[in-house]
Image (cartoon, rainbow, N blue to C red; front, top):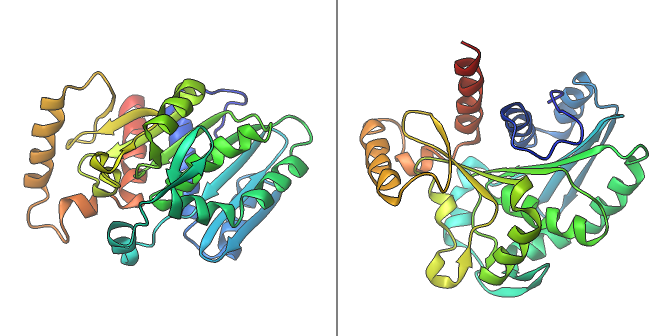
Amino acid sequence: MKIFEPKSSKFNRYHALATAQAAALVYEDWDKVEKEVKKEGYNQFCYFDCEGTQAFLAGNDDTLLLSFRGTEPDKLEDIMTDLDINFVDGPFGRVHDGFNRALNCIIWDVVEKVKFYRKSNQSLFVTGHSLGAALATLAFAYLEKEGISTDALYTFGQPRVGNEEFAQGFNLKFKEKAYRIVNNNDIVTRVPMRIMGYSHVGTHFYFDSEGNLHEDPKLSWWFKFTDSIKGNIEDFGKSGPDNINDHNMLEYLGLLKNQLHTKAA
C-alpha cells in the first residue's frame, strides 16, 4: 500500500493494486488492519464502525488512504436481495437511500478525521469493494462538497449508486480521477438495474475472461457480451457460479498483481 505517487490523479496500475490491497485488508479485524498499515509506513490510523458501516483511515506525511468495508462473501445475497432502491437527495443528484443512510452513520466523523490528519496537504485516495465501493463513491462526493480535495477513487465490484442526474454531476467533476474496476461477469456491478433509474459513474476499467485490463468505452457491446459467455464457460465446473466468483475481492487483487507481473516481464 505504500506505492503511491503523491498528487497523482491519473490512472496508475500501482495505485490500483495499492488501493485493492486496502480494499481487501479492511475485511480483517481492526488489530490486524492497524498492524499491517503501520508496517507499510502509515503512522496514523483510525477506524470507523457504526451500525455495520465500517472503514479505516491511514496516513503518513505523503498520503491519506480511506478504505470502506464491503459485503462479507457469505452475505453477498444481502446486497442482491435486500436492496432499498428508493432514491433520496444526495450530492449532485438523487442517490440510493440505503447506501446514503449507511454512509451518513460515519461520514461526518470521517470528514473530521481527514481534516485532523491532513497537516501537510497529503494526497487522499479513497477505495472500497462491493457495498464498500458504493460507500466510497458517495464519500468521495461528500468530502469534496465539504471542501476536502481528493486525488483519486478506485472501486472494485461497485453497484450503481445514484440516478442519471447524480451520474452526470459526479462525472462532470470526478470522471478523470474516479476509476470503477469490474471483473468480467461480476454480478454486483449490475445492480440496482438501469430500468430502476440507476446509472454508473466514473471511468470504467474491465477485466476480460483472460485477465486483461481494458478501458471503456474502447470495448464494444459485442465484445463484452461474447467475453461474458466465455467467462461463464471457462468457470464451468468451478465452485460457485462465475458471476459470484468474479465478485470476490481476492480475485480482483490477483488480477491486478498479474497485470503488473505481465507488464514487468
